Image 1: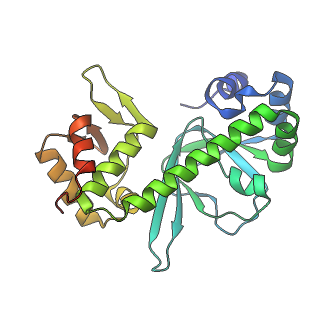
Image 2 (image 1 turned 180 degrees about the vertical axis):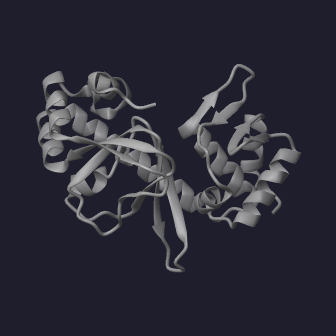
Length: 237
């Protein structure tokens, strides 16, 4: 659902790390920024480009990805409404280090980097919060690298738990609905598995009753059981 112009400040204050900025500062960023829409597959930011803006996701989902030495896409994370993308290049005045691609119809507020930096400099609390967000992204990237050494079933289980923590909605029956519509190709690029292996691992996890699949959504039905699989040193492939 698109964020109405007259409710944009409210959305930013309630849902984003920019919410700690004074109203006047936030209104200034809104005036200097511009809203932009993307369709599925659009490249929002491309690796190697100058990092002179960042974007607050207002609706939709994006993936942050790179291409490895074998020319295979590696998905680093998925981001949704209320999250900020492209901030690392802005904060460090560097080129983009990854591609950011729309997974579905997405709307964002694009903010000039120089204006954001001025706002953060004047509000150290918001600067600290931005730094904390970057640290969390680095921890997630580190976990993905560490998990890549696991057997396939353990890797799949850990990846699904990580997605549940970031994008999950707990339902009344205790299950966790991962609020991402992912193809098995995208999930495989996130887990470091081929499409065929993703399909096999999901089928095995369904067979032991720790997940179920509805349309393109993964639902964790037994969180502790999935965690047990993730922590099993030699979970079968």
